[in-house]
Image (cartoon, rainbow, N blue to C red; front, side, top):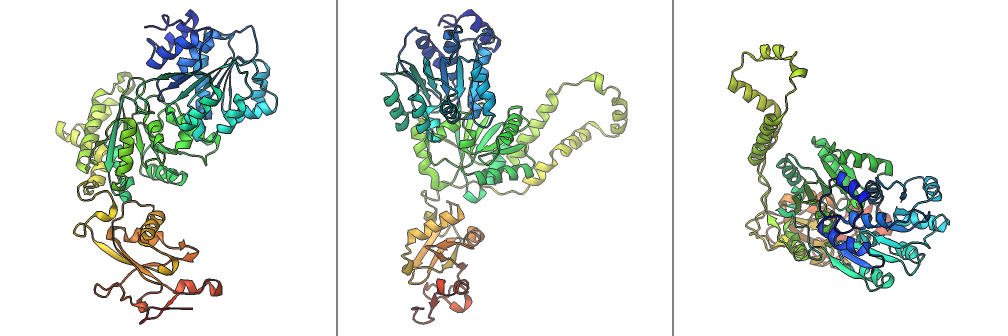
Length: 576
């Protein structure tokens, strides 16, 4: 089937042929014929990111625009500025030979007076973010009473970002006879609720299997200790010399920290998160689209709406709390018929999350080993050789320099020249990875929880903590405190004993400094916590030598408001 066969007119065909469109993608084949009808039903289209949705609704809207009327006839709502601008640019490309179709973008972070002036001059199609559009409606600068069709693009993302009230307020301004086209990657209950309230007997079109990942995406998992996550990331990146991808982190702080580390270690990387101004975001995204950056470290919110088609990798530095978001992340690679990899760096405590994702995407993760130093060096070396073999030589530009170069190198034979050439480009990898350890975590030594690792496999350190039954402390609370304060979900926990005024616990000795550092200046139930390495006497937990511990001293600094806990050396009774 061709675009002409599904009803696209000649002027638009000329424009999309220039863009390289040959045959309709599945979502275009299914959606365009509906929209080309004079009267059509509302449509819910479930399709992943990067499946050709913009052309699916954009081509019919442009063709059906009545340019003799200067009012707004079609509205497209999307979650972010980046996606809004991308849709506008795409629509203008499709309408290249239909100069009388006027299209405008409306979004926050730009001068509102310029957007008002554009609308005042008359537009037929508006691509907008909900917040800015609602602002213009309240100012009486946008009239939606003549809207024929509204498109809700990435509806699940808009609802995840908290736009439900804005969407309902905007939809309430439109005539009841309008048509609604809703695109979503997942059919969340919130999406279904919007559909039920504002759509009339919609036709549901599903491209691929519902809630599944894109077919061209490989889902790969690397298991590591949480403390080794960044080292694992570097090895994954170094083992793919041509990587071009997005690294997703959970928080803004972590996003910036990972980006800063990558830059310090010599990678072409930068961060994208909510603390950046719009100007900073634009600079970062322009560099990334031009491939001046190979790695973009981002939060999910900041990356929503980004439209970059040729990503080779998505790296989940952390798994998202909402597993639906994994589908959105992975759908950013493997577009337009290309292959892509969605990589997860996980620890054994997250195996149940991985299983849930597998059920959701209806695919299995390929569990792979973190590359060893030798493997990375080999890949980098042969990548370098391939680059040398494929480089094009411009004789005219270098001819004048060659005699001097030949003279300087004439003392070297063929083999020496190759060895020196390889070494000057390659020594940093050899030096860095010469003695690096294996970061892989065996999946057979534990049953998923950190504490199930046997004592034969783990060296435990015994810790003292100055809280106990008087504060209703339970063993599960100790594990929770370790998780919360260290932000490490992979610490093996041994024996825990809760006493009246204080407690002891055992934890993997590899994390001793992490634990001590994490609990400095910490509190539990309004009490200043002190965690120390305990000097045990034999195997008796109750024999704690108070003389060797200053656990109560920090409490005394606070005077009467925070009375110290004093432990009697014999009776272990508390005194005030």
